[in-house]
Length: 598
Ligand code: GTP
Image (cartoon, rainbow, N blue to C red; front, side):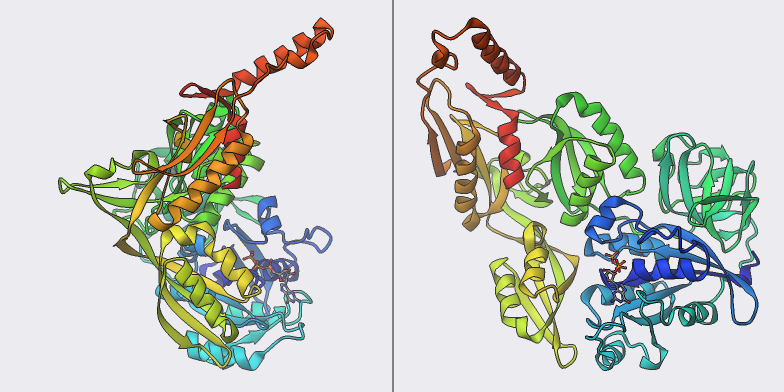
């Protein structure tokens, strides 16, 4: 397709404002997908996403459309996720575009995530097409939306289009606006290939499928290409576009978005954000890649059956391929055996990675209590970073500890100001500013410890404000806090999987909770077991499991021998999965139960 007829755009919105529904309508209206084939929310093609109703991966789709001026255009749509944890994926999609359709739910108006996404889009210099969606709903408040567009986003109200992505009303006007307002890919002087890897997936037969945006030059099958960052070269096997099924093409040229397969088997050789260039005539500079994102939350992930360790490692490698912000490293635990220490962007990211492992890779896994990365200043002047409570140095060596803090923008209806402020205080936060957004909404700016956000802040905010509150956050440095290591011990031996770093004031109640849960699941033994929660050598909570009087077969006296044998065999099978903590045998299942609840 001729460069001037190409339009590359994303849809950006706050979660649930209707991106996927609008994307479906665009696919239908451009006859990319026939009505009959239209599976609900086609772009969100992972079950997990459909269930959670959030878009987490960007899928590029190419549409062909005959506009009112009778010319045929190629429209490349890159879907973007809408949750706070995934801002990096939004910026990744935006890097491949010249414009963005901004959807606002006309019944809810601008939300915290709308503001964050618009900031990203404007920073990249994209043309914005604002669309007010869900105008079929009775709660539509266009006047509020116009005011917010101008006041909060500095977008003239007259630029806004309206639609109902559900009924299809207003969709043709949106397509015409995309063609009229969003510029075509710019002309570049460079004629050699420079193509950005926007995303990728793995096909077990064909290797890595790179999703690319060609910025200069062209690429076709049999071309020799080089990955800029590694210098490794490959022969291109196939190029094409997603319609949304893969469709092979002769060539991908300047300005287009599509896929490139080059028999790359090692997932580590295809990095998102890398530049693919020509082997014979490479560009001298890489395209601007993406900001490196650092994991903010860590947790141990263990296979429930230790025989699954290797499969888990392979699954994690594949998962990391199109999610470079997920990191992992092998570790072992006395309680849980061999597993991995994993880093995530946030709690939702963590849940989604774990769900993907469970569902797509069929792994039975358990994870430990999440931790953030602490800066621990030692008395000898050294600073160590700790993301695993097990490695927190002895309190006698520690001068002080700093924890990561974030600055959050929280948008809520006026009625909930009081409740939101008390939630912020309860979570050790500081409300710094309150700005009226319009007559009915305020934006609170607050500083909060990341650890508190990771645990349940977003869920609490949502339920407290009946779903109307929204939050967006970014890291804002470190601050000192009275943090301690809470350790759980069984007959004086620590259970590593339960160690956590918590605020001094929260240690006792958490220690008591875990001790109670452990007491409920640890089987009685021939001797008394003490379950204790320790902070710096002091016991803060204690539970006792009294000794067992009879052995397992005692109740079958006089019974037949086969029944007795069965019981013993059952006990033996159970022992295989037993973990020895000091002199106490505890079934792994008991740890799993307690971890699931904490
Ligand atoms: P994430 O993928 O979660 O970020 O959400 P999204 O922005 O893709 O939203 P989605 O398209 O899944 O829509 C969210 C909900 O709003 C769904 O239940 C849709 O059916 C509904 N919805 C979307 N557009 C409209 C509309 O125009 N009118 C009405 N009544 N409902 C709509």
